[in-house]
Image (tube, rainbow, N blue to C red; front, side, top):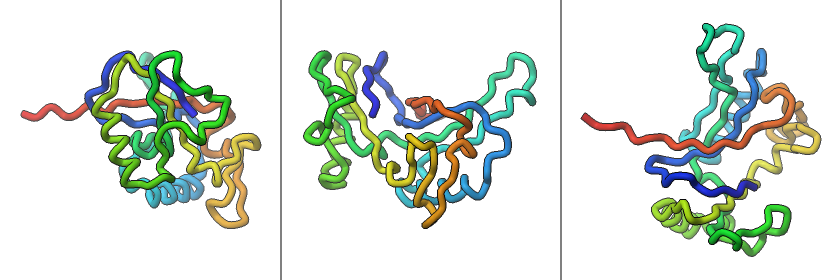
Length: 175
């Protein structure tokens, strides 16, 4: 669950995701399984990178963190509210906003309309629960990607915490 207010109205495509510190020698097999699972769910419209080893960069050069980002439409639920009317993130969101599980076509139309009308004067609440059957955040493990296999999440992300991020992909300027 994430709740936010935009500082500026985005003009490009919006992506949400996670970032974490660079992890030495991530498991390529586990990473490939995760990428295939995500690709089956959202297509190829996502970005992932193991990031840059900060020790191998020139002084002053910025290291790309380990990153995984998907288009905002991959969220499972969203709600738009006036300030002070937003739902509590610690309570139930069962009857709040628009949910993908209520119908993909209706959800897609509602998400498209919301993205056309993004405002700096509204509070946006997003929920992403689809991967919860595969990620046990309490025990920091992947479960169920491969039947019967459990994997320490730290092999991909390092130790907690992860940082939730939002990116705007600017449209290329044509010439």
